Length: 416
Ligand code: DSN
Image (cartoon, rainbow, N blue to C red):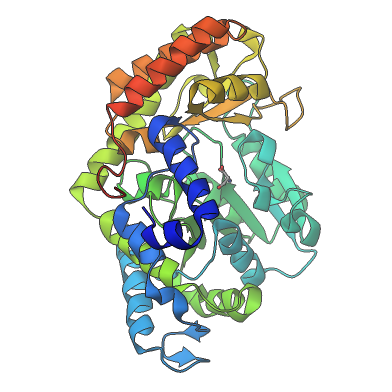
């Protein structure tokens, strides 16, 4: 692995090696993570990183753009084909930047926007007060119903009528259920608002046509190519053709400067890979694994928020186990299982404590794990939750984690 770095910067090499060991030997269940194919690693580390370019194919501010233009056009065409979109911009450096570009394209500072609360499933960039979105725009938050823990569409409609937003944002980072895009689109139309969906978490499942696509209903769809798309670490935006020019101008020079061609090439590869049968089969397994995990954990005395999941993630309420999210996250990490503490709807705890954890199945599924392994992992989680102060039992679970991960090798042979 990294033969040149190993020779010239051993300090840095050791840090990357340490992280690789963690990834190889642990069980990775952070819902926004995946293991990318080696092609993505190669492209992101390729000579494309040497090129500085601003603008778009056919309209550049630097010479020497011929090959990179071809790459960007290829990536755009693949994104459009994969999602059946009219227009695509693949320059966003991240999902947050993708959202920022859309806001810059259609909003003025101070404009009113409806977005889902971060603590009930939304994202930081959907109006959180600690993020630019909540400081620049007048975000009004909607959430989930207390009874079902699913989106309260009646509240969305009521807030839309009351506040007449210029934009309604749907999607998020910890919502385990399918969203009724048609319903929210109808609400947006009824108040003459634009409609944007942030599908960053579920884009891979949408690409594989396993859950409904927001593309037919939304004016703008933003995403990353990480998470379920399992590829490059960056963002992209799809939109109706009529908004294409506005979107491009808002991306550059609006919120970004020069592009990252090495990452855009890795995005283009990610889109191509997501069209294959092999990828679709893996995404179907991601959902089956999440549902199996939710079902078994439910029988072990955890409360699964909304009662289950339609996608790649589930939220566990740990209160029946008398644990906080922070305690469980730490305990699981100590045995080699990585999850993140997460607010549950109407959580009485603070964000750095929380009553829940978020668990995702994309990474473990891409290593080849199936329902049987989800049963084993659920059992390990139960054992950890019930024996958090028992060092001997925790040590035994850590050994089980090592044994399980060793049966599903990661990047075997590639870095030797
Ligand atoms: N929004 C963060 C997450 O879901 O983990 C990073 O993408």
